[in-house]
Length: 235
View 1 (cartoon, one colour):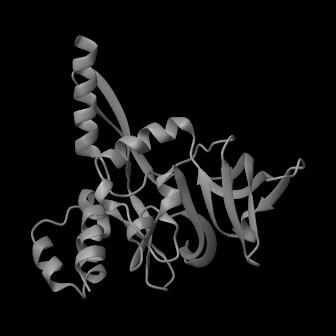
View 2 (tube, one colour; view 1 turned 180 degrees about the horizontal axis):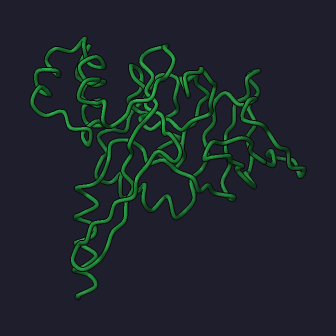
View 3 (cartoon, one colour; view 1 turned 120 degrees about the vertical axis):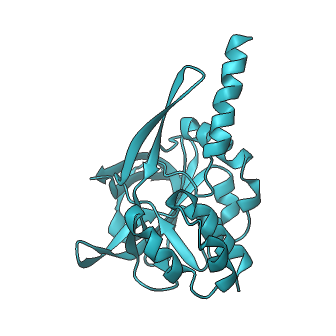
């Protein structure tokens, strides 16, 4: 009974902490098919054997195409977008998140959210301003189901770990310090936690009703909720 009570405490904490953004995943299934789309329009469907990274960024993927026995390696430069099946461990985290945020699931032009809802992470190549230069990176989209106006991309390693004690259990979770944010077709730029107080007004400038709501309460911790409201309530 005591263990059950502790479990409910943990779940209650998770409910409060649940985000509308899809979690950033780094563990992927080696049993379920992945879907990769190359720059020339070719689709490669198959089982991933490894995802190779440098400083958190995907550099290449080794995959055995469906119906074949030979593994191939595709560099990130050749991939325009992809859906990667998340690991069973990540699925547990994601299922908890989805349980409390079912209302964010839906259709988004150009992105197959039905595949994502089955336990897939969505990545796409995008131009970003990085160290004053413009680079093309393959990044996970964190708001795939409400990203038609503004897309938010994970920045690998741009997190800080924080701990909270609940009913004697220490829970460690990651808080994002920054994201790459892309407005329309513009090049994505880094949005930092410290800059959100000034940036939010520019992001939602064409939605005065939302700006009015956020005037006295636009905390960075609610960025996902602000963006969801902007995407679903503003023309």
